Image (cartoon, rainbow, N blue to C red; front, side, top):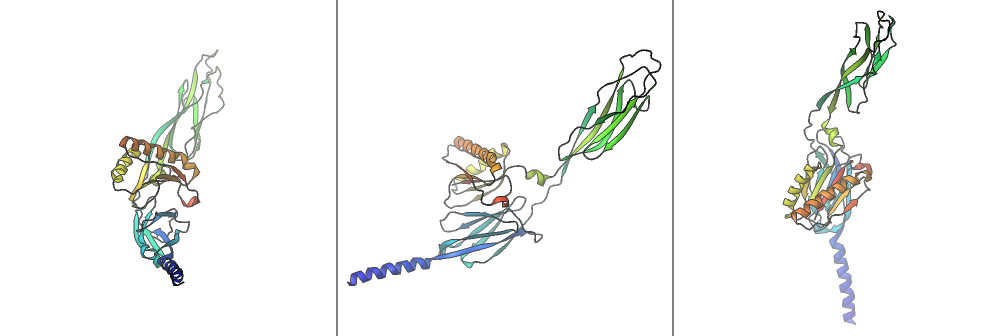
Length: 321
């Protein structure tokens, strides 16, 4: 009888002790630009607790807010936040998740590169206009520039006549359209009253125009893959460094590397369906490099649509255990 009572008492005490060791935690805050109170959307925030538990990732909302919640042991809720965002310096903040204290994290913007200008020449010619044996004038013939890409504009234009007639010499030329997107000239020619029969002579209009393309480095970056690499084992560090060069040669920009010494699966993560091909390319390049290095690595693709538009397009993550 006493023995049975003791067992019941022991089980109850153990349950109470376990409950006391665990605690609900909530941690969150706001990520803003260092030089202004502007909230930063799409900043990646990783919560890494020093206890041997997998790291947790989230992204800031349109208001720059982020949050984590969970249950952990009271004496194992210390760790760090790793905050990264395109065009900003990486930040790291020590945390004690049991404190339930909101954070205001200011990221320093990286120096912006000046826009660059590229220039090329466009040339368009009209169909040949046959000369004729009278003193009359032909109708007006229009010559226009070709279509441009969205980031191009038209600068200076020049126009001339080739062949039988010239501008201001039995020919007339005029510019009728000149905008950033299009240039058009017109010309007409006078016939030959000294001729009795057609001679086969002809005149062509030639339009030359300057095509200017201004390249915004920040806008250009938004169109390329931005890859963030996380690795666990220190032995994988050299592998990661070599992989960065392999990916760079393949045209994939590695935005940052972090060592996170916690359990997680090898994976290539992407967050928008239209980025699947980019993620598959990262997977293929990484797998090929792993094979050449003779290292075991079982990568898989992982699509995570939960964050919606809070994650920038072309943001890809590579997690190497």
